[in-house]
Amino acid sequence: MSSIEERFSAALHGSARAWRLAIDRRLKHLNLSQASWMAICLVAKEGEPPSQTRLAARAGVEDPTMVSTVDRLVKAGYMVRTPSATDRRVKLISLTPDGQHVYDTVWKEADVVRRELLGNVDAATLRTVTEFLEALQTNIESLP
Image 1 (cartoon, helix red, strand yellow):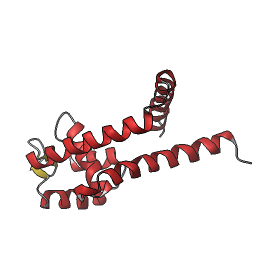
Image 2: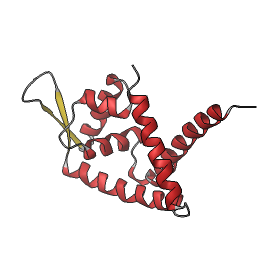
Image 3: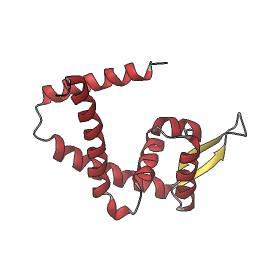
């Protein structure tokens, strides 16, 4: 029999994976990989254009993996790289108008999935679970 901590860990991992796959299936018509649409969303949500390194960290992937993803998205016309004004070794990532259009589409489709999956969840329960997961993320990010 598994401990509650093991069950929680498995449920968290499985739910996150299933959530991303549900959105991925909804976005199949865009012909974008999960890594691509996630990178587009991360760039769109940043206040300022992120560096490739910051984008990789936010996505939880290694720099070379993000470089390949950004290469594909630049080639597709969804992103552009611009040199940093303060460090010419650093490339900042921005969405093109086509990339912003893809983000708007992804957001709308993901919102439909969110409403479908959470529509029958009690609001107080959703708030409690969300606050717990946010606190857990903060704890994880503070680990050495």
